[in-house]
Length: 281
Length: 237
Image (cartoon, rainbow over all chains, first blue to last red; front, side):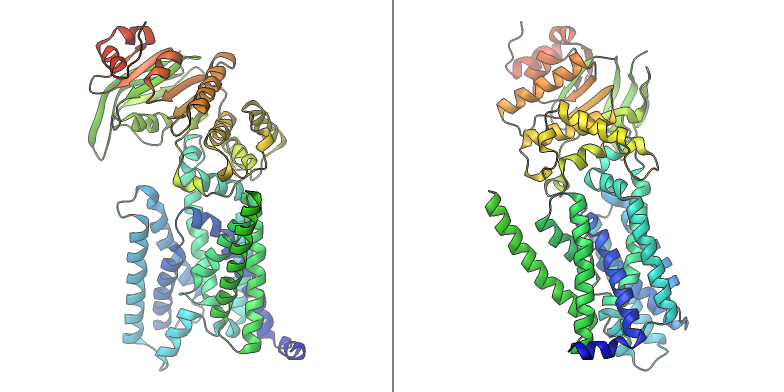
């Protein structure tokens, strides 16, 4: 098995997949805690459907490097969705559902009407489930994804304390003079960027898993915000790396393999957490 | 000059007025209780004072060296906080956030301030404990320590004893009184507990159709005060 792995390691696309996969997984775990606690677990799903719609538009116009345009459209929708926050006329989950289903339907409709390639079912399937796309990344995609991932990580570290403050108690933060709406906007933009990055890895239907599993697993085991965040990041990197390697060896789809591993490890964390709590009590 | 001046405030949502004609002033060292029935607009008034919501008309001004963002705030607990993984130290430190501006991390001074306020609220031994595992009274003291990190002058407390048992309630009131008497911190408190309001407060703001504002003694002489105190079965001496 190891020799097979070493053989695959010779191929640059395997290295690319691993680098991008790990970086993207790391990014998506960072804001997971914030999203879960703000009751926005499904925002990832909603935005990824928007990104799907955007990709459909890009492919109709035959834009090869579609990531920049997809990011712009997704960021705009994220801002619209999160800006309303608790005071919106249409409540969070309903707005997310509306935009996501709408974008999905319009995207598929457009692809059907104007599809440039013959293999429509295959194209759609790989966008939705990410099947093999991570192994076929172009040099541009790799550089773009890696750069953006690093940017997201730097932003997260710089604004870590502010994100904590706004997540824990938005009203207190606003009352004491923290510009909460500005940071909510920042969170929205970062999430949108992460979603588009993660689409390459697991496809648009499975993105939420990458965002919420690390956070939920960490929250079972750890008790301070910092330890939860650090554990979620480490967990995410390890499961993504493991998932990519397994999928290469076993020939399974990358996205669902990673999510499968995350389900199993979440169950482990859940059990360990419950046992630990009993001991403490 | 007074620390907080509200003039001709009228409050409401979506253009619908729920309260009007609110005029009051709070001076340094006052202990003001805001009382009134459920749904009378007490929380809306509090949000307006904090600048979270704008009034339909009228103004809220701060003076005497107090800035709008220097009002410490003890909110009612939200659902989010009930399963939030955060240590006591992280939460208290977050009270210093506004001092940071764009600086990404807390400096030594802010960490020392958080430490001192945890000491003062007697939660220093709990510093590394998880917030969601604490008792209701401990959680309130943690949030109070956080509010103290944000202010040295004025605290706004929104139903600080709701959900606490009688013994812890008494401790909480004693703690608040101590902050008022010894540290000279101005207290604005929303309360259902009219007995406690009459016992500790120097001033009363009664929020209803006819808004009353005055000292406690004036309130006890007023019609609103007499009825309310009687309903609450308080021995008026």
